[in-house]
Image 1 (tube, rainbow, N blue to C red):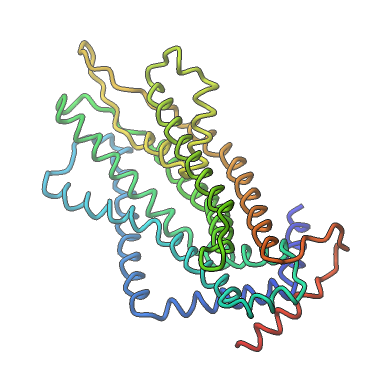
Image 2 (cartoon, rainbow, N blue to C red; image 1 turned 120 degrees about the vertical axis):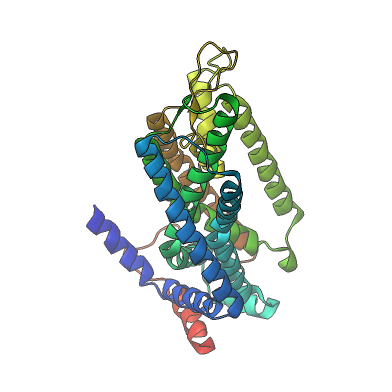
Length: 360
């Protein structure tokens, strides 16, 4: 099965259009790396990466030793600021993907004459969209381990330190349980899996938006659809947060199926941030008091929700790829052919490949 998949990928990448888009995407990505601002941002990201790795290692050590005392105030303030800045650096790879998408599409739509030349090559919308989408992934995916590690280290420390400080302020030492090493391992696994899973979805949504850009005649219907989808996503996010408040209460409104559906949708939309926040929590353990802390979901259940959400992310990715294909079709690209021989190569790819070679 794996050998068959690799063979299909090789045949796909052998198409002239895909080869041309890969070469162009790598060239744009390399040019951006040579700028002073990009090198400075890379240095900052490397520093954040090292900090995140150190913080994650410290949280594993705390969990293994069940060390629950918070940092001194001054040290906590400084490290917390660096950790929050590291979480902000998490979005760097996704921003790079957005910029690269803009460059790839703007190259074809920089003027009506250039876009008309693309249309006259006879390329169909499906091949055009998939070639650019795959080029984005091939360029960006190799570096996605960086934001994944930054996310894991930043979340583990920020949530862990805040909950440690809160517990220490309320009850003092001796009334806190540290998260287990398994909890942190689940956090690291979800950080990597869900970060990589969000990349194809992010590429598809960016590609659809750039193909229907305002400069090149974004229709009111396309704008309305995107606003409606955004509002629906925000409403679903709020619903998930509202239902998530009942996780520890186990009341009548917090039925298991309702929680599962809510967290699945929420995880697909936010990349698993909300459910990941429960993993590095330091839980209060104090009896005979009026304070009853919320009990987080078990780690195994959080892992299951994260893995099941991958199916929903895949469906959303396929939906936005079809949306991008439909958008390209509205700009006069041909519809996808009904049938095609399994080993055939589209003839129109050679025209675009030759045009790209002429640009080089």
